[in-house]
Amino acid sequence: MTDTVRVRFAPSPTGYLHVGGARTALFNWLYARRSGGKFLLRIEDTDKARSSEAHIRVILDGLAWLGLDVDEEVVFQGAGVSRHQALADRLLDEGKAYEDEGAIRFRMPREEISWDDAVYGHIRFQGSDIKDWIILRSDRSPTYNFTVVADDIEMRITHVMRGDDHISNTPKQIAVYDALEREPPTFVHLPMIHGPDGKRLSKRHGATAVADYQQSGILPAAMRNFLALLGWNPGDERELFFTISELIEAFSVEKIQKKSAVFDITKLEWMNGQYISRTTPEQLFPLIEGELVDAGLDLDTIGRDRLLRATAVQSERARTTLELAHRLAIRFDASLIERDAKANKLISKDPTGFRSALSAAAQRLSGIEDSQWEAERLETELRSLANELELAPGKVFQPIRVAVTGNTVSEPVNVLLEVVGKQESLARMEAAKGWEPTA
Ligand code: GLU
Image 1 (cartoon, protein in one colour):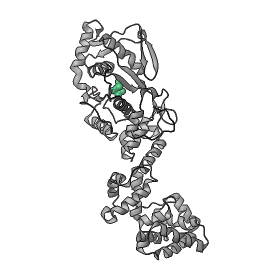
Image 2: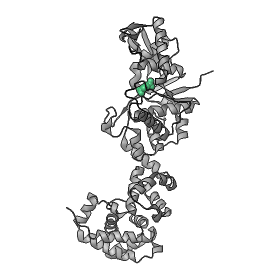
Image 3: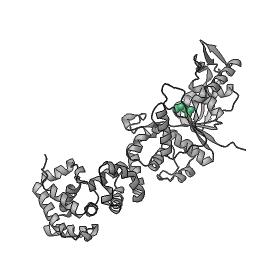
Image 4: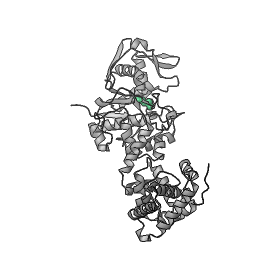
């Protein structure tokens, strides 16, 4: 009978939840779900000075946001200190450790220590190269390499899946398993995460906290999908989008790669945009509602139908829900318009042409009945106007786009006008005629 898989995520609550930590948690969770095992959480809070309740909250919130549910009670390492001390005393009694200036030092075996890493293959260290090390400090506080083994034994962990920066700790930990006459778990070391420049991921590359991505409008499904592909390859390179059950189905330790993974924020945002465009406006709207209210929009007055229509239109263009909310807000509140450099350039290049195009268009569009103000009709009118004026359609569309949004890029102008509404569109076009060209 094979033992049920039991894996754990073991963060130290001394800072925010790093994307690398989230990737480790996700791989453990996927492996547990794939194998019908258990995913456990151990908060390594023995460093009391640096650990805090707030950091624990952030970790729990991050896991919950990513949908990584934890089986069994969360284990707090700090609660096990007397057990750690008893184990250290036992090793002392058995002569496998010795006292040194009040501390307890572990006697490293001299021979080779090796293991078959599930990712890196056979790894060997010479015990004689590693100095005897402290397992219990003189104040009787236990040290990391000792507590991790004590707790992994206590929690009956079968697979230790963690960043490969822990490879150098592993021989010390295996030596403790041996000293305690316990079988070590399977070690699964995950490749490092680098920035696109090949350097170890750091804040220089952009946000490294999961919460920052949550706040900037990344969807948890997109984040999960993106993190899953950091160092894991489903086998088919073309396959990029997975539902959570597809990820569980496809996940296997054999397909974890040795080479470092690249954390490319542009790719994450692109991927997020894809998720947004595949999400219904009804599902997206609650995610942006708060932003819209904060931006000062009166949602009741605008009405649900128009808001959903505008959400649907922007969902095809926004990379984050924050961007989605911002674009949507501009469509309902002219005071949020910020003319960008390209828009200014378009105006200053030909101020007279800009104004006359707006006048002609406004005149033409004001003749459309309120009930007829929809994309198809608007397109017909604008094209025939351009035709009559012997202008390329863009010469009519671009001034309108700039007047209504302040930008030279948006959804198709006819759709834009429909979303913004007749009165408001005409008012914006009128106001833009007074815009001073800037250099
Ligand atoms: N607290 C350690 C860390 O955050 C745990 C390492 C492990 O998983 O063994 O790096």
